[in-house]
Image (cartoon, rainbow, N blue to C red; front, side):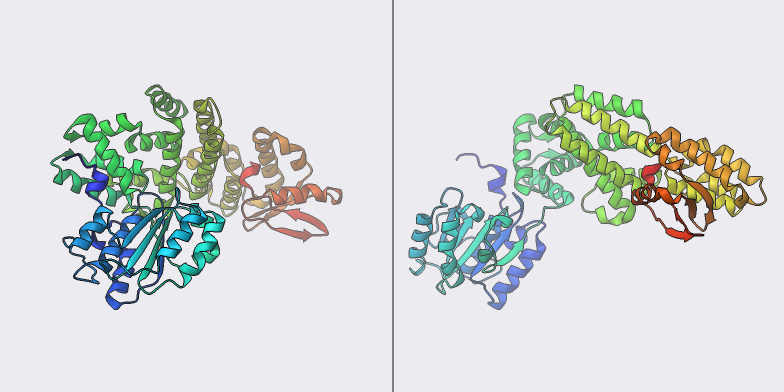
Amino acid sequence: MSYEVFARKYRPQTFDDIVGQTHVTRTLKNAVEQNRLAHAYLFVGPRGTGKTSTARILAKALNCRHGPTVAPCGKCDNCREIAGGNSLDVIELDAASNRGIDDVRELRDNVRYAPAKGRFKIYIIDEVHMLTKEAANALLKTLEEPPKHVIFCLATTEPEKLPITILSRCQRFDLHRIATNLIAQQLQSIATKEKLTLSAAAAHAIARGAEGGMRDAESMLDQLVAFCGEKIEEADVLNVFGFTSQQMVADFVGRILRGETADALALLHEQCEAGKDMMKLMSDTIAYLRDLLVFKVKPDALSDEASTETRAAFAEQAPLLETDRVLEIIDQFAAAEGRMKWAPNKKLHFEVAVIRAIQTLDQTTLDEVIDNLNALRDGNPVAAVAGRSPGSKKADVARAREPTITKSLANDPAPTTDVNEIWGKVVAQIKTRRPFIKSWIEEAHPLGVSGRNFELGFPNDQRMVMEHLSSRATGESACRKVEGRATDCARSAGDV
């Protein structure tokens, strides 16, 4: 008997076998039990998530000798023929190769004939978005009012390419990418049945590489068995497919967050020399930062996606920076990823992105300066020095850059009287860090501090400058009239 690959051997045969699509299987099981069957279904989702398998199982549930039933026996002639793809009553069409109007006309002529053995004649049309416009229009009337013995099951990865007239005639089911942990569990189950030794780290590495597709994960496991035999470790997965370990990505991001430029670049060079795909490493880095961001907002949201070790790394790295800084770094890496796609030297753009990200973390924003000024005005120099996150890198930045301001205001019983001195020191920092706006800033003069706002006055003939600075603000900003002069609290992370 010829060898059967895992993706075919372990293809789901019942609704309960489908992994990670409970919202779909539950609805279909209820429809079968309650005899509330639609005449057309549309299954949408990424590759390898179970669209065609779900359609086949629905066909078995309806045509099983013991049905209609939510648990087809799999042993009767109808079930075996459907599983083998040779049932006369379940016709599978590939719209990628049968996309013309003549193919649809033939289908339309055949739907009127009664089923040969089962209760229903079921048409499964895969990649239905590949039908030509004329073929799709020819299918419309039959799709809307087919004979009572006919059910259509359409499947596609790109529903946006389907005419709205087809979408409106179907019950739509969106199949999601399967969670990493669920794929890893299924791989472990297959390994047990095949008497393989698959480490947990290797299963997670395969699941991450599959990007939510069960079929891809099973094919990768098949390839690994051919490569290394019955014992599979994480290193085997990384070597065969060129992936990087999750621990390495966590270490790489950790070095960036701690501002260790040399160490981060050294690790990047090490991965490049090892033959790792720079685009894949960039994608993994962005995905890790995204998960870190989600963890900061809601730690339990990644219980199905991240391993225990990865969540432990998130818990260690999350306090190192604020949410807005994570967002900014993600944006920078995403922009670099776009440039890398067309660049011959991808490593160069990656290096620049790493250095720029670390410089971003080192920058003190105007929001932080204003927070420090307010803390000093309230007579709390310790809070001003520590900044908003005492345990983060910002605390060190604040201590390094603002000792003279802290000292002068801490010793002054009335800090509000030293607004000019404060502003002079802020301008000095701006000239150093953002020289391209120093001429604009020099036009302003301080009016005072009000709450969290540092009020600046501009001459009447510099209104355009004031408005431009105000439009650059990314934090809170307030414009008011003070003695007939326009003032602005230019609180912007981009202006410092």
